Length: 290
Ligand code: PAF
Image 1 (cartoon, rainbow, N blue to C red):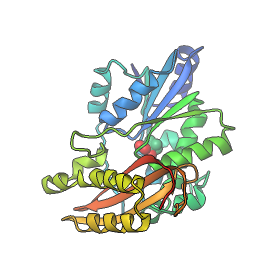
Image 2 (image 1 turned 90 degrees about the vertical axis):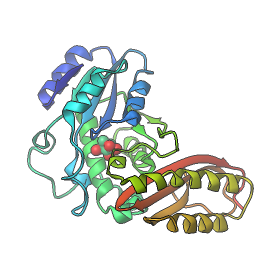
Image 3 (image 1 turned 120 degrees about the horizontal axis):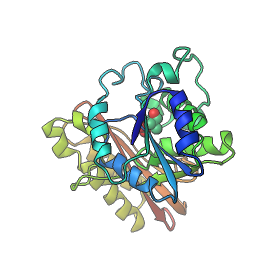
């Protein structure tokens, strides 16, 4: 496992060591946990893979009042963890801000996330998806991966990346989704879980329990508006909790669905627990939404 910091080193490594191999890219912001490690295992499912993992806390995807400065940066620990894995990457690319933004942070971020970038996560995190797409586009252009792997937990991010690959990369990068990894009690793993107080950590598994309950009720044919309202009330009533959204969307379009819908639905949630914003989602099929 080699660790490099510059675009020049990246391109040399791809030419020399990635030659005749499938370039598989796993982008991260570090503070690695089992969720990231599962993406690395998925990367090794590609035959003859040259796996590149990036670690970069991207300033343009954090809003002014967000946790950019506080975001955990633990490169040494991350590298030790990666080195101890059977499915370790071939290359770790950990560029500094000066490599990704050599001319300073851009005023105009491209490509834009558009309308889908302004709903759900985009309401509380305006500009977040523009910054995320910008940096992922930058990495894709520098690495030119055959395959890139993203976690399903960030459903809106995954949807927007798939759309960008269609629009900007002529669908030439295969996007693979890694299943959300959960603690034994159901809490989706996230680098932000480390901010949870003991009390908030006890309450957090209610998020996933609620998603599963909603799925069961919808699949049993209960009225979707009533089911969602009941679940919203239950989540808002949790101690220390402030519900941001609970919504049901069509997985193919990311648009909210209503009665009569048939197909693959995604149930999305964002809940603020004692100051820590947690997101989660599940996907399931619906015969006909009541
Ligand atoms: O999901 C993340 O960790 C980030 O949004 C990503 C994709 C690495 C871009 O900075």
